[in-house]
Length: 199
Ligand code: HEM
Ligand code: HEM
Image (cartoon, rainbow, N blue to C red; front, side, top):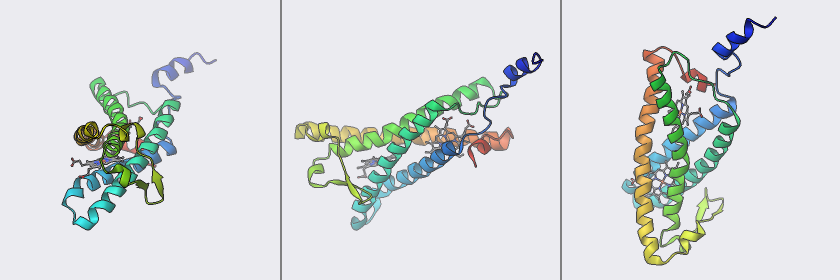
């Protein structure tokens, strides 16, 4: 009875989902919004009037920690679900580039907030300036880093700061590729991937 249907299903992968789940979409757009907003806050911190710097940096840190939590949740979603496969007609180099960019974006969603948290934990004034998450409760610094010798801590503070900045550069490049790829499929190939990620 089913002799025809089976090879067809194998070929076109009929069982595969054609769109991301609502949870995946919600996490994708919420995290994207928070990351882009946080880049704007991080980059503008130095050029703001004195009275603004502290609240802006404190908000930047709180948003960053929130991204870390949401990214971990997203990775749990990712390992427990199969995402919709990219259209078969895409050349294999494009599929490979998309998968590599997605993997790197997951890495950055963790590495950016983590490097910021390490940078902040190695700050010499950390002990006298507790970090408050959205001014609601105290968020812990990384104790191991906070308790290091002050000279080493100062060096690490600089290094983690440089790492945080460079991870930002990596994010800009990947994001340009990621958004550029989505828009190319939308406008040039006329084979939308955006609608897989939009409710
Ligand atoms: C979504 C996560 C995050 C993103 C995308 C992000 C991005 C950035 C960017 C682009 C800068 C400016 C770098 C520069 O101009 O050199 C920055 C600065 C900074 N970030 Fe983050 N960051 C994130 C999370 C965090 C977290 C979790 C913390 C601490 C808990 C943190 C602490 C800082 C600090 C202290 C600065 C220096 C601000 C200044 O004095 O100019 N960041 N961040
Ligand atoms: C910081 C911002 C962003 C991050 C970190 C990010 C990250 C990701 C990741 C990791 C995936 C792969 C999901 C998976 O299969 O596991 C993805 C998919 C996607 N993203 Fe983003 N993204 C961001 C912003 C954007 C923006 C601004 C657009 C708008 C063009 C966009 C459009 C898409 C689309 C269309 C997909 C689905 C691709 C497919 O069909 O396979 N993303 N994003």
